[in-house]
Image 1 (cartoon, helix red, strand yellow):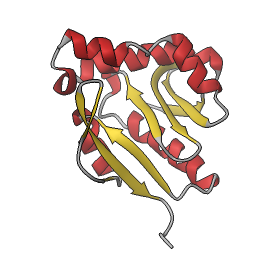
Image 2 (spheres, rainbow, N blue to C red):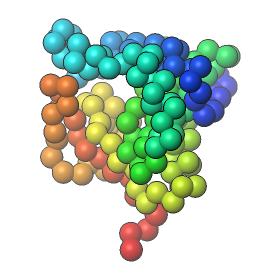
Image 3 (cartoon, rainbow, N blue to C red):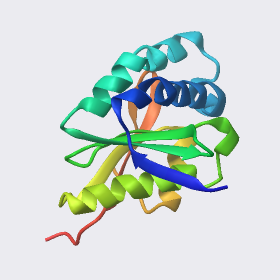
Image 4 (spheres, rainbow, N blue to C red):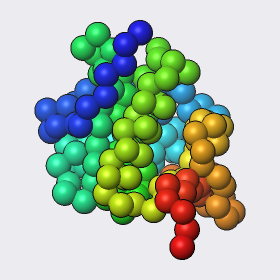
Length: 159
């Protein structure tokens, strides 16, 4: 499987939104446990318009991953280093797509002089982020009525 990652464009919003929604619905059961209220809160802003706004924001950097021309992953981070979205479709989970997205985000952060990446991880993604150099930072917080673990990955030596 050849994974291609490139900067996202506004034209990717619908496919990227589909990636996000299918990942949440099918991969993240440990987080939402099928609870309709939790799912509604989590999915409320996961619309093509929201994704288009994220992609178009000058304060963010967004990437899409594709295999054979089909969008299979989407990631985004603020220019200050907060990873806000990193999702893959269920059919490519554990196939390196998430790592490819995270690597592209990290590369851009390094080029921009960001000292560390930060994020709030779901239970589902926690091991993925740990495997990719992130460490837990502080106690878990609540997001969309779910537990989220603040995490950090140092990119440059702390001064």
